[in-house]
Length: 134
Image 1 (tube, one colour):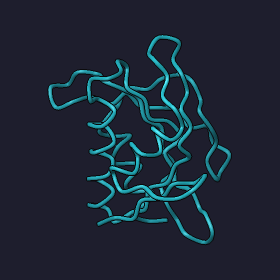
Image 2 (cartoon, rainbow, N blue to C red; image 1 turned 30 degrees about the horizontal axis):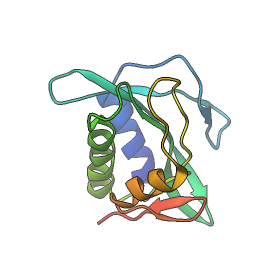
Image 3 (cartoon, helix red, strand yellow; image 1 turned 45 degrees about the vertical axis):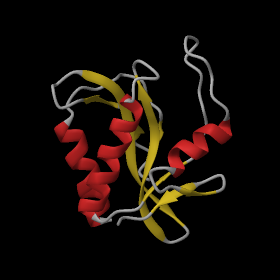
Image 4 (cartoon, rainbow, N blue to C red; image 1 turned 180 degrees about the vertical axis):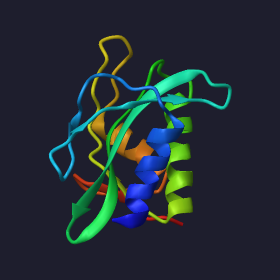
């Protein structure tokens, strides 16, 4: 789990802001908290929660949560692009379960739209999406 752990540590160190809401548990049963993602100007645009995950004897980094603070502005894509770029740098597999969670404010999107959105970043699969590094 070397490069996967290094990838997660890098992102949590780079984006030091935390949100005090647990989104899951890692393999050590430690709670996973999202970090606040900042754009290149230092503006907080979203939240991400990651942890190393083992699936079918393959180590990967599971994205437990990815959300932009304001929808329909490209911030989610900016966040995911950075996660993918760093995954390529660290040569790690990213995985996630594409489930849309409404925020009570924005128009909801269908699961198929969300799956298609992740597909544009190279994610493939059924209930568990996976993206191999390039």
